[in-house]
Image (tube, rainbow, N blue to C red; front, side, top):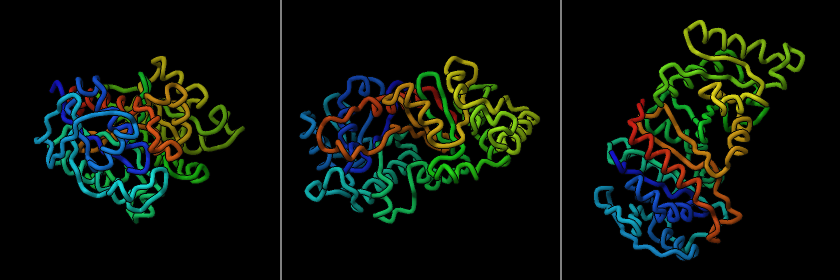
Length: 334
């Protein structure tokens, strides 16, 4: 599989998704490493090319096998969900939520029937999804439900650092309430299983601390003593190679230099900040535990610069690179 077939979803049409997708599709490296095509709307792709000052041949296709995958040509599986004349860049629109969900649903269908080797997603907007009454808060929830996955896990990949998340899109107060022994133990097990999918035979996982200095034996909070330590002890008794809680101000650096294969972050910003401070544009999100392979940029729709032709496609190109690499290497799915 020298050039796996990848479906790139266009994301929210009102955001920077269409722009970074067309820029990625015209990148020589993307062409060399994959056979990629776009799932979206031709009219929006054409507009993105125009305001970005780019030129390309656009081929409308109805299935991946109709694509030619030629450099300088963008093959678009046109779903006809969005009319560019009705599109307002940088604004929440229900029509964009409907379209964004439609692109994702189609990509999942193609991946599930084996027509594509991986799906690479551009950013979507949660407010647009809500306005469209789409019953999902984000990509991960869509992929988990529509593929029937029971043990999905989000992983950030940045250079040699891998980060998993115990909680994600909840308030910080709610995240703290969700840090229970059972949930932490489940997170450890899912993270270890995900690392084994990536080829680690006996992965070594570190669990980040929640409180300053990982609680300092109850001086700065009891969550470590009451919930996290018991979960780690239970996991080690089951033969899992896990340590923690390790203070969050040092655990990510320790993993970066090779002390651990991955870190289990306890809440959204704890892991996001670490990854994005290392290299914002090259942080890639990988959803593991699915029967299909999915990678994604790790940034939002950037409504403030949408439609201006100035968005960077580095993260999209990196998401394609990671997806193509895992597909070529036969990532174990399921």
